[in-house]
Length: 403
Image 1: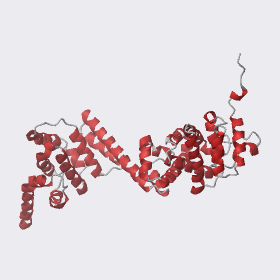
Image 2 (image 1 turned 180 degrees about the horizontal axis):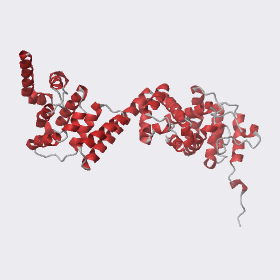
Image 3 (image 1 turned 30 degrees about the horizontal axis):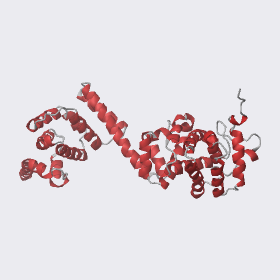
């Protein structure tokens, strides 16, 4: 019968004492520290005590649940200042210490997972740390993200911590990480990583619910110098909102809603999410045009389009009250007819329908014709419109002569 081997007991304290003794002998020399950690891996069980090792290198000792250091009433033997939290919080000091992790992972690849798991645990303890230590931890996160040694997953853990979100610590930590990460790489790289992880659409969830709004988020991002990241986020937010509005219009049409219900719903959505009229009219157009099985025959599609759009004139008119919205719609029609070749000859009929029903004004049509048209299919569309434009100009001249 085999006897229980004492050495096989899980003994993080024993591991800690061995590691801290060796760390102290390096006197804070990072080259010596890396050499000691490299050699110790063959004697001490890093696979088993990977998270304990990361605790020690980050916080200077083993962390108890809640984030306080386990000192066993003997802090001299059980803690060390040669750690992330023991460093100055300036960038150079923390970057130098981050290299200790990088070299260690290069030697013991499996510690990459231990480090990420440990950070996932440590980030939950933000309340137990000083503001300075939180900043150091955020910079460590950023440098490890920039070097590709961890993923965004530990940051996501913050969203599960209601108290950290409520007290504003989660949002502050996120901003500090993003600031240092962007300084190391660039905004487009950071944004790509956020998108890949799915965190890009959850950024506002880091803000306490009582204050959560795009305005609060934007102001904080600008304070931290994250203007380009904010631009990416705002662009994505608008795209998400546009999809949401398109789905709402689609659903209401499919349910057979009355036009006045449709108009009211679009207006509500527009004001709730601060969308502009020229953004909304493009969504309305796209949704209406995508909601039809178009005839494959080019000679029939124009009449089909006019008949379909005529039914929605009250909706379209409601969101083309400004000349900017009118021009946006006209350019979108040009773009649509060019992209969908069957509609090439339908352009003039659609524009005429909208002119006769006061959707698009004479001034906007003339301005489009003279200078504001898109280059796409320009010669075809200008030729189609020529007789109508001549008629408009003549009518204008006759009116001014009568006056």
